[in-house]
Image (tube, rainbow, N blue to C red; front, side, top):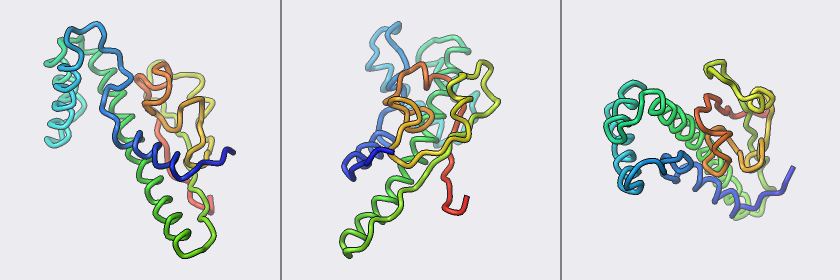
Amino acid sequence: MSRMTAARLERLEQIAKGEPPLLRVSLDSLANEDAIRTQLQTEFSKSLRAKEGFSGLIGRIQKVTTMSASRAARIAQTEKTRAANGGRYGDIIREYLDKYNTARKNHKMRPEKPKVQWIHTDAAVEPRSSHIALSGQVREIGDEFLPGLHYPGDPEAQPKETINCHCYIRRVRRNE
């Protein structure tokens, strides 16, 4: 297990919670990529506020990009996975850093790092063998499941490991 500094954990939290949608999804076949990225971010926000279902988000993506339904669905799934797991991962890091900083301030022992477990679902039509192999594995926050991959949908990972991923992480409690 690698030793993670508080600064590195804070950077991972920033990545998990703050990176814009579609960071790793290729839009290079579209004209005016930056404007489309901005429009898509707006549509993602509107979809979330409206509590739309998956088909609503796919429709919004198609409206902005004129992509096929299957490509729009792939982007929607990728962003859904990234947002859900990134938020969960960022929350776990923030909770740990709060405990860590409190312990340091009070000259107490560093708290135990939280652990997360990779869960592969059967929802993917073409599941990755690497994700099937990861299912059930546990890592401390800050440790990678694969190079650059701290959680399903991690924007720091290679696109081949994140695009259209249906996996998720769950926090492992001490007694498990």
